[in-house]
Length: 362
Image 1 (cartoon, rainbow, N blue to C red):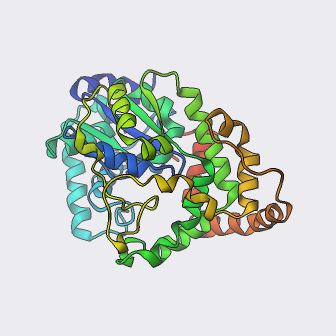
Image 2 (tube, rainbow, N blue to C red):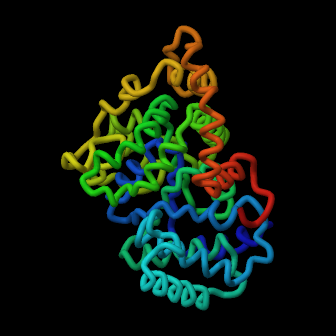
Image 3 (cartoon, rainbow, N blue to C red):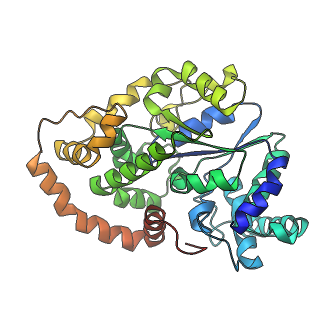
């Protein structure tokens, strides 16, 4: 039994639930988080990216230093307060960094030595944030946690994982358009130029199709687990109330009408430059048809066909779009090189998540 698992049992009695929202990138995890955080009991945390950036819950947590734990705890507090773009310790406001570092020290000092493990301190940190907000259930929304989902369900006996399932062609279209959001946003600080460049570089049909296929495979493998739940993005947009009611039942919480009151402020909906509207936008379900060229559709359907069909997504291509596929193949070397140059750490973390953990840190 890993050190994380041993301590998790001692923590489970102090927290009713932890909800992890997962999915392939651009699957609507933020949208679902907005829905859940409207519940009076639920605290919607920022995308903390704790598992992956700092520790891997799939392996034994041995020889973890206090310094490593403090850095990780401080990052949880910092990212929740400032968001991921401003939440990296080396790039944030110095005063906020010092406050979060001191807070991490106080938290760690209150925990017994037996709970000085990556999983235990994460639970303690988000529990503190949840209590501070007057809530009882923390909800974390890092998409790639799907690759750690089985371990998280084991480490946290009261946790639930909610996986967002979305048509891979829509996922691809959303990622393709992501970098353009900087031009649409009234406040460009919301998506700095460097992040827009990273979003542009990160997009490629081969990469997006592979990540969707692997994430969906993990979800399908875990779908019989009593604390693992799949929500289709399309159902959420087209039939929001019955979909949310059913999810609440599975999570063991009461449905509250205010959960339907969301603003269309993420990339699957309207730009904030035009003013956010309330409610769900079912038109986003099929918007990919106007965004992807035939080669991108052909690549996606070829690489993801089996899992698409098993999850109700029907291919539309009648055959391979040869010129479009050649275009995708020819651009892949540039894409892979650019990703390694612009964001090598993200590429490494994604690769390790896909392949499985081999050490305590990645």
